[in-house]
Length: 195
Length: 195
Image 1: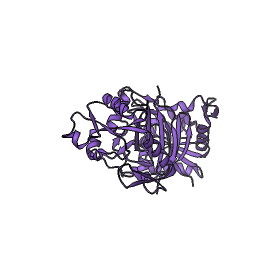
Image 2: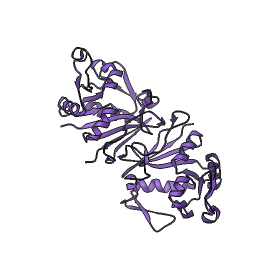
Image 3: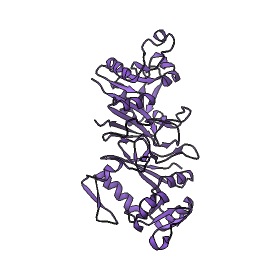
Image 4: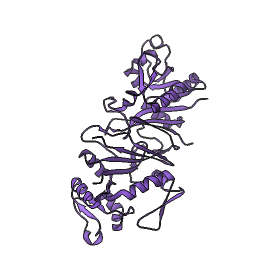
């Protein structure tokens, strides 16, 4: 059975976007590097450094399903039913979009986070599940359903914006020491959640 | 001329204390390690790992003056006029405490952040100035007076509390890639502020 991961690119002060969903300088680590990491869906590659390539390959190669919230799904038009990471997507939403089965046949729509994680685990099989929306991550952390918290920590301060972690329902959440992969314009940190 | 540093121990989600100034699990990296780092003021030593000792020695050996806000000064009773790091303290406050010159003869009281930094630089000489209060750090960052931002990043999520960086008056602040020192219960990161 695979694990449940979260992954976000985050400013040093904890934000994954500005208050208007702008990403500012967060994704500089996707550009200008010497290693091409191809997308599953287009001819466009990410150009990352060796550290970024190591992290992306580990992530892409081991992810069997993704979980997204409705906001991210709508922002990307559901990735036109094919996520760049090449894994099926499970969307948490109270109301599936119209004609969902025809427009997004490879995408699964469920009503709550617990169902999303069990459905994503079923799809992923031996591979991992990655949660890619902060609202879902925050609920999954509160429910104790996350195995590993991953952060690509970017050397910028935003001052305000959309928080990766937000408030916690059950107080402080202890993590174990991270695997640290220092890279250009991002320090990649993977923290097991302490059991 | 030395540089102006900030240093704080921070949770992964950006907090240096809970809403009631409690430090929770933040200072586990000060305890249980195999290296003793003595305090300048007492027989009590910090017990840190090799990474922590490296970071603490660099910090202690190179700091010629500290800057603190009034809140921290009051919480510690002005460190009884002798900070554990062994460096003189400059306190930013609108009103110096009563009998300040007698009770804290080695402590300097000034009315604003710009004056505090120039006074601390004068005291420090060739050594560095370290700012140790978030309210002062935030003002100094807005004023463009910080050379390096240092974080001991702890594997815990607080969910709420006192933010290291807070809001920024002038939008996003770019940092250069950090020096990374991975340690037990803290990953030590030193980011030069981009000029």
